[in-house]
Structure formats: C-alpha cells, structure tokens
Image (cartoon, rainbow, N blue to C red):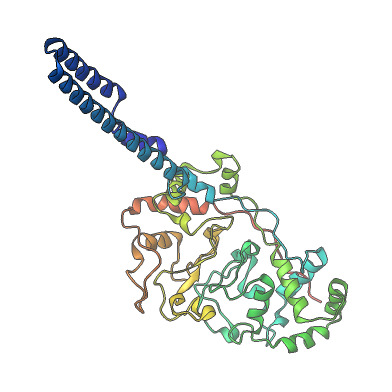
Length: 396
C-alpha cells in the first residue's frame, strides 16, 4: 500500500474550511437581523450567547480538522517507514557482491587457494581415505550432492540435507544449526566427525606431513609444516572463491528491468508483498541467517544442539536462495523434492504446532491461492547465477 492509496481511502474525512465559513456567515447574519429588529439589553445578551455558540461551533470544527490531519500525517509516516508495505520492501534485497570477504588472519592468496582446492578434493582427509569434501559437495551439483540427506562414513545416511557451498562465504554462521562461527571452524567439523569423514586430526597431520608436495606448499604459504590450522585456512580460502556470477535478479536490481520475465516480476511482487517471503529471505544471500521452527521434524534438535535451550528445539537456519533451482531436494531434511513443493508447504503445509507441542515460527499463507505458485517459482529460478568452473586438480 502506498501513501496515495491511503489518501484515496480517507478522502472525505476532512471538514472543508469553507463549510465552517458558511456556518459562520449564516449565524452572523442571524445575529445582525436580531439586533436590527430587537434593540436593547436583552438583545445584546442574546447576541453574546449567539456569538459564544458560534465560537464553540467553529472551535469544534477546527479541532476536528486538526485531529484528522494528524491521523493522515501519521498514516503517511507509518506507510513510509514500514518495510512490510509496498515497494520499500525491495530495499531488503540487494545484489550479490562479486568479491567474498576474508578475515584479517586469513588473507586470500593464489597459493593458498590452490592448496585449499587440492585439500578439498583429496580423499586422504577422511579416516579410510575414501571421502573428500567434494564427495558431498560436487561442482556439477552446485556444490551439493542432489540427495535428500547426506551420506557419511561407511555410507551411513545422515540426518540432514547437504547445503550448497556456492556463495557460502557471505554467511556469518555455518551449518543448519549455526554451530560454526567461521568457514575456518566449519572446515574441520566434517573431517573429524565420526559420522562424516571420521578422521582424527592428529593422524591427518602426520599423514599429510609424509607427503612432500603438501609439506612444500605449507612451508610456502604458512611457513610451517602441515597443521590443522593451515588445513582449515586453506579450505576456507578455496571456498571463498565459490561466488556465482550475477543472476537475472542481480541484473534487475542493477537497473536491467528486462532481465526478469513478466511471471518472475509477479513472483517478486508476491515475494516482497502478500507472501512475505522477504521477512526471512533478505540480503545478498536472501537469508537473514536466523533460526526458525517450521514443524518439519521432531527428531532433530536443530539449534538446541548449540544453545541447549528448549525453545530452540527444531529451529534451523534460513537457507540461502541463491541458485536454489539447482540445489534440491529442499529443507533441512530434504523432505521437499521441488521448489513447487516448498512453496506449497508455506501456503498450506505448515502445521499448527510442531510434533512435540512447541509453537511454529511461521504461519501458513491461507489467504493466497495455488495459482500464484508458478510465479513465485519463476522468481526463485531467476536467482541462479553462473557458478565458477571447478575441476578436480592433480594431487601431490
């Protein structure tokens, strides 16, 4: 809703000043007529009373005008300031930066990125030398795995969907439950997890220090032998290069209005308007980085694993929507195969409460219709940017 529409809706509430003037003229004419036909003290008293009545009527009209004017001003100010209404909500959506930020203690260098790429593809990072980071984060799958839930050590089916690593550097926290605060911290988590790569870090350091090619590179990049800190920093540096090229939506935001189809534009209107997706999906990744309970799972503790708070049970981080059309299946447990199924879930599938009785954080969009879903999906598909071309390197 815009201020002009608000003005149209309250048109007619104002009391025109010329109406006040008309009443005043009529009453003054009556007073004059009385004074002319009935001179004397009694008439003067009547005139004073009539003037008093006139003043009260005019005062009441003026007060009403001022009050209604204040209401209009407040309405306009509220509409201008409320990001939940109208075009101002699009300001919450910004183009993806083309350069990933790096921490001061881990600056980017070509040599470090090259080392990180080798480590990323090296199965010797796992306990039985069978899995690399690229086993679950395949370049041809938008650095996901295309599975509902990840496969871990010995082929074990894990509890959560593998998130894409595209544009991952723009997050401020990592994993579905936010347990890692940096890419460097996150890099070592799957390596030493018994359910994932099942590698002891001390054993990994010994194994890689027995490979001359790795020792030479670590000495060049870090001035030290192979160590877990250097492994983490190298893997993080490589992942910071996984930034996609501008998507059609990025080009639209930069002024190329024809970059989106008519249906995608309609989807954008729903995204920032009636569907209210932008409440959680905003910023360069179209994610607010916060945690929400949707009632999808009662077995996974979600954010409670990190905080220990019962109110965080079943809450998971808002995922990025960048290249979302290439990263299905969807949701933290991979329970939705297609984008249409995801949108249908938000329209009608969200339960009144989670299975354990805890309240959900999002309500279903019962006022909207399924005929709108293709437009929302068309907009989501416009968020796909060309990923960097990555192929497996030669390992030392």
